[in-house]
Amino acid sequence: MTHENKFGMFIHWGTYALTGVQEQVYARMDWSREKYEALMHAFNPVKYDPEKWVLLAKEAGMEYICFTTKHHDGFCMWDTKYTDYNIMHTPYGKDVLKMLADACRKHGMKLSLYYSNPDWHHPYGYNPASTHQWKAVMSNDIDNGIYREYVKDQITELLTNYGEIYTFYWDIPPKVYDPSLNELVRKLQPGIFINDRGYDKGDFSTPEREYRTTEGTRFTRMTEACNSVGEQSWGYRSNEDFFSKRYLTTSIDRMMAMGGSYLLNVGPDANGEIPEEYASRIRRVGDWYRRMEGCLVCHESDPFDYKVRKGNPIVNIKDGKSYFHFYEGTVSSSVALRYFPKLPKRVRLLNTGKDLNAAIEALPEYFQAGIAQTHLHITGIPIDDLSDEPIVIEIEW
Ligand code: GLC
Image 1 (cartoon, rainbow, N blue to C red):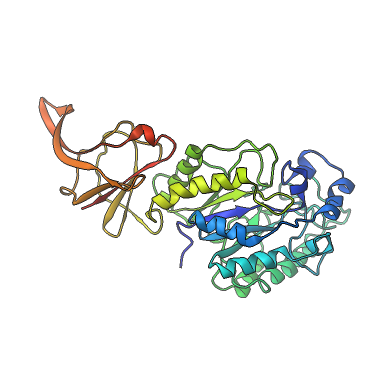
Image 2 (image 1 turned 90 degrees about the vertical axis):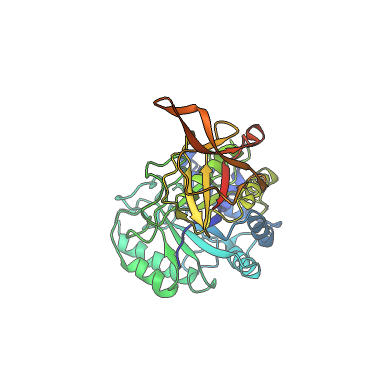
């Protein structure tokens, strides 16, 4: 089992959805504790129907959902007995995590849990070694040991009461080394994958909001990239600055072609719905992703050195077929490979599902010392109709 090349949905949901600003509105807009924490008394997401979330993720080809059980504000989205600052004490009063876990199980969706280390509500949450402490309760007698016991109690609930959990997403590295936390996670959920933002380095890395990476063409460590559909927030933002389909699909293609997983985030609103402006973007990305026919999952790097004339594709191999990922599109309606093992049996443009012509030809632009050089010349790419997504060419040898 590995956590490679999985496409998933990240969900940031909490009482902050009521503000329509951002998941960290409390700190970033410098609200008072009274004003922020009073939000829980207004949180009543009567339209919450987690099956709709799960089906949206499924429709987009996603295999898992990662849900914020507790964000930096310290508010808990499950029935925890270790604080009253939780969903059971809102007007809604139902365990939304339990409902989500049931919906996931019903539809074969894996469930992952996000848990913030910074905690702006717990009396001992302040951790001077870490970041995002802006609203921490600055007790005079800082005692991280007490807070860590609380964390252990809470993760015990989370990893015991909600069935099988796929990955565990610590957020904001505490910069304190304490392997006993991940040991507990693994004891409770032996098959789980843990990210690198906890008390030790965990199983996988988490580049965030990154579009390009400098790592070459293949991650050397298990990796899960994440981004939201919009630029300013992970939680619901009523006037969010949304990313283009071009930007999102390019980022996903690139990270997954390099062997990474990818979490694409949405922020449900205070009614409990994923607003159409968010959902439509998931659908659009999902439409592209499904046309990739699973080629981004469980592939290897293609070792053959094709010397592709233009563009800088990542080339992977799966089930004996090569996949050329032009994550920023091809520059013309053709692709020319200087070297190739043989004449392909079939060449397809996955974006359209249609066959492309491929011939071994001497091309006038490419010659050396007066001698024409032959290429595998793949032609007929409807480049201008595909300007908003990466282009993927499948070659069956
Ligand atoms: C950052 C943000 C946080 C968000 C997370 C997602 O750490 O502080 O709000 O939940 O990224 O990875």
